[in-house]
Image (spheres, rainbow, N blue to C red):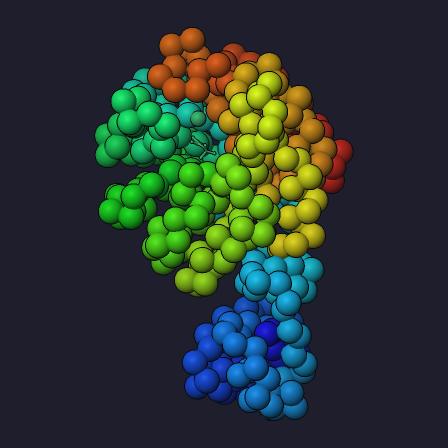
Length: 341
Ligand code: PEP
Ligand code: MN
């Protein structure tokens, strides 16, 4: 249930509503806009209805949220899109955010080389995994804490905020020291304790859609983070499993307009993991920008042929400036402003 307060409702009136909602065992999430305050009451709808808040001091009206996800639903923001701040940069709304970097952090030299290139060519954030979800336990698993140090150095030098994955709740505090955005990978989208724990850090979260998850399941996963009071969630479509074996995953671009209808959260596209091949990354990136995506997260490498992980899909650093420029042009046609700072 959403409780919409009257314009000019006082703090006492807001607190009184919060108190009454909590008194019946529900939780209250206060969202204060410029003019209006909306209180999301999460819990059993019957209990909130029974409070008779309609007509209570400061309350304008009540709106039931029928979707199973509440805080993530478009209704929760009354159709207004969320704009998320990451270290001074804006994600969502009219902004288009290009996030680029290697699949995995391999060395200091590689991380800095890629970070410098993408910073010079219009990326707003640096991606790179220090903890890698690998299908085989015998594959390289990431540099861990050492990788985090290289990311920190790249951030100090280029000023780019860092997007990096956490897979194990025991690593959250280390990752949180470096990450400006914590990535939850596709394979962990339904790791609910991890989502809650990451939500509690208050650090923005990039939540990737599971390999075989519906949009509703993705939004329910986002709800776990939002429920912890962390409002900065970025959804990411990275390709799903279908019967098609001609490419790595099927990039579901309809997820962009569909998620924009269902939710107020920004939606970014990862063309790299879907395509699996660098020559398919640009067409899918341009299509994503044209579809109204709020951004792209793309893999880039200074020596793709030597990459430890996902080399065939990595854009070479030499090609990144042209790529970024073309994406920018299409994003602008779709009505977005590409923000680098
Ligand atoms: C990644 O971004 O490096 C990654 C492993 O992605 P996904 O979780 O989407 O497979
Ligand atoms: Mn990868």
